[in-house]
Image (spheres, helix red, strand yellow):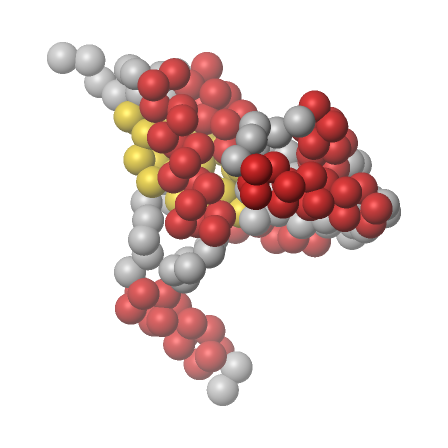
Length: 169
């Protein structure tokens, strides 16, 4: 019986780095909205803009969101008993979820659990986009189990928030 190699991917929203021209982001969001309304695949222009923004140079000062997610990721990784690990972003930042899944598979992962920092119901990224991406990837990697650790137990989320409030009370 073959053993599986575990992998974990932490997905964050992604932020726009300081210094990235706002007109690029505005144009990207307009193209995305038009595409979604027409139910078409992304255009070459949309893909080019998306890549340009995701690859924009970043530091902790220019993208504090990325720095914060990477800090959470480092702490989470330390608790995963040696599982392969990657970070991914829904938008504005690299790598994408698709890229992170591919990277873990190249490292030998055969059982990947995807989780997100977006805890509450109702978000398009957490409830729609991430599941759609995983559904698209499963046929490409039939020998890999892709699981999405969603939805969160809202009582556990509330408990975490209560602990945070207590720290400041």
